[in-house]
Image 1: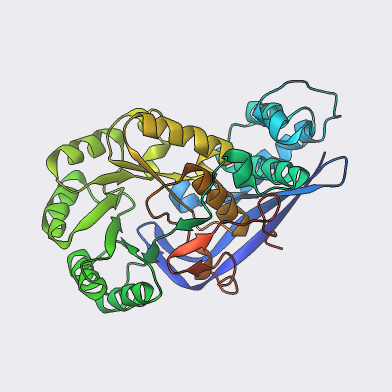
Image 2 (image 1 turned 60 degrees about the vertical axis):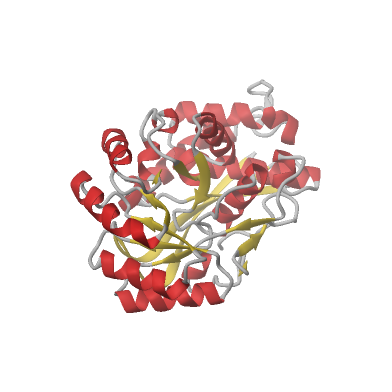
Length: 358
């Protein structure tokens, strides 16, 4: 198995303002694995340092450290598992064994995700089937997605939300946690009407007292849920006991024990943070066993990361609207995995079914 790595930059069509700061560009790492038969599998590392604290340099170092395990002779390791069933021997053993060897070298989810995606891509190409059909015998054909509205001035947010509904979205997610939150939420609800689902995302920007006060005031706008209103297990648990609005966790889901802590009504899972498709499916099983709902989102991933998430979502269906309609935020990528009437079609080609970034 041969490994190659490339860095790529995607530029936002407009600067994106979030509780973590303003984003103007997105740097990613594309990984390619080539097996002995010449099949190429592609994966993507998408760390976002303001969000997950992991830098591109840290991720690239982990991927380079995996090279010895990935390029080991085919007979250097043995083992079975789901990777063998999906794609046969690759690299130094089957896919499960190879991932385990990489994990032993550096257990960094954002780096492991790229290897996992590439192995599934090869497995699907080898089988001549899309990845979702390797994950489920009845995957969904499309995935419902939400429109994401940046934390702009109220009138701008309302205009963007109205345009999203006109384009066919049935769920709108509004960024909050900056300024004019009450005015922005009221303006967006008025613009989208009572029938459109509205969720908020604070990215942990509020204190417990601020979140309690804000959600008491905003509940009248008919919120589906509020994502990451505070951060941490203790504060999320305390807030959930004090408010009537449904609470979802995102960043807090990365904390040990969070997936089964029963502190939230829903959990947002991400391919990058879960270490790939396999890790995300395992995390979803834990969340569902705890009684919480699952939905997927991106960390402003590139086409490979979004495709991987769509395949996982198709296997987990039915799901609430997922936050995977983010490629259109990048200049020149509006037609890649395009949203039609609030849904994205799951790629049907072999493997992940999309090309890489470069």
